[in-house]
Each structure stands twice: as C-alpha cells, then as structure tokens.
Image 1 (cartoon, rainbow, N blue to C red):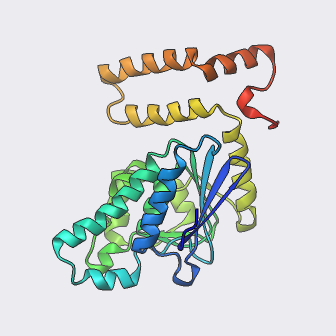
Image 2 (image 1 turned 90 degrees about the vertical axis):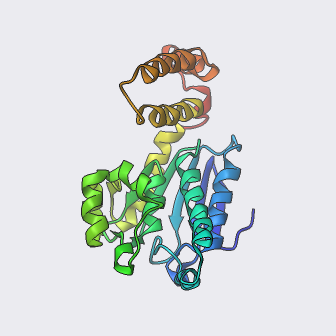
Length: 264
C-alpha cells in the first residue's frame, strides 16, 4: 500500500508504520489521520503480521494538530468541527482496538494528538530527550478526543495537573505517571524495540488477542458478576483452543511451540 504521509514496511512478522512529515514535525493533518486509520484497519485481517511498531521520521515524533488545518477550523461550523474530530476519534479507537499488539517508539517531542497516539499503543518506549505536552489550553482549547485514552494511562490526578498547566513533561516524568513504559538512550531505541518484539513474537498470537480482549473487558468493572463469568469462560476457551493445546503440549514436551518458528 502507498500512502503520502506515512511509510509502511513489513519484515519478519512486524509491520512498521513511520510518520513521515518531518518537515512539519509529523503533525496530524486530515490526510495523515485518515491514512493511519486506514493502515491500522486494513492490517487487522493480516495473519502474517504479529506486531505493529509506530515510529516517526525526523526530529519530532508528533507535534499534534496541523497548523494549516487549525487555520481552516477557525471558520468551521460546529457540524464541520464534529466531523473533523470524529476522524481523529476513529483513529484513536483503531489503534486502541488493534487485535495485533502495538509498540510506540518515541524519539522526539510529542504534543496533543501525538500523546493520544502513544497512549493508545500497548507498549511505549521513549528516549531521554523526549518531552510531552498537552498544550491545548494555551490556545483556548481542550484535549477532548484523546482524553479517555490519556486517562487510562495516567489517571485523573495527573490529567488535572497536566491538562490545566500545559507544562512540559520530560521522559522520566512520563514514565513515572505511566504515559511511557521504558526510557532508554536514543542510540538504544531500536535495540529495545527488538528486545520487546522478541518477547511478543514468542507468544501465542491467539492468546495475545485474547489477553487484549480480557483487559478491555475487566477494566469496565473488574468485580461484577458478568466480568467474573467472562474470566471463567475465557480461560476455559483458551485452554481447549488450537493454540492453547499446542502451547501446553509444547511446554510439557519441552519443545518450541509452533508459532515460535525459528525464534530462540
């Protein structure tokens, strides 16, 4: 597939999507939002892809909304604003609901919608030079569309501070509050991505999908009777599934499971 704003590469079961507007700090214009959504949705049915890495070309990871788009939005009606915001919301959901595990590799500054993109990925790794910022209130706006995903990552208390102050968040503070999982030196970013990828690719694809479903289900209400019954059914289903049987057999037979291929 060919896109104008992102690069697309598949190698050894890993799809790498690269934000490719470095001249404008990879800010999210309408085309990039639509192309990212399209890429994520089209890939969900590809059984050969077992991990999606999201990274960026250039100095910045993502500078949030495109300034040219924002200039046009000044004259938008409410209905036009709703339509534009719906596109961004659909992208965030496409990333969050990906049946394929996702890894954000963050090498530079991240603003607004870019923070949402990082928060929607399952795992996120950043370099010490990275800074995050929810700068919307400086412009008289609010980070509304990304707020549910940010809340799940950093919680209401941290949102209250950083949504209201719009102060810069360095990489180590981002790790402390849960926006990123790991901070490694810039030169070690790709090595860390390979390390995490190795772990993910050693795992059952079906079990990974089921694990993501499990998390989505229990976070709504982890202690209700409906959730309790779901967890009982979920473990029973996976134990009798094809990959569940293969994984258990491989463990007891002390051999690699079928999905591991040549991985050590």
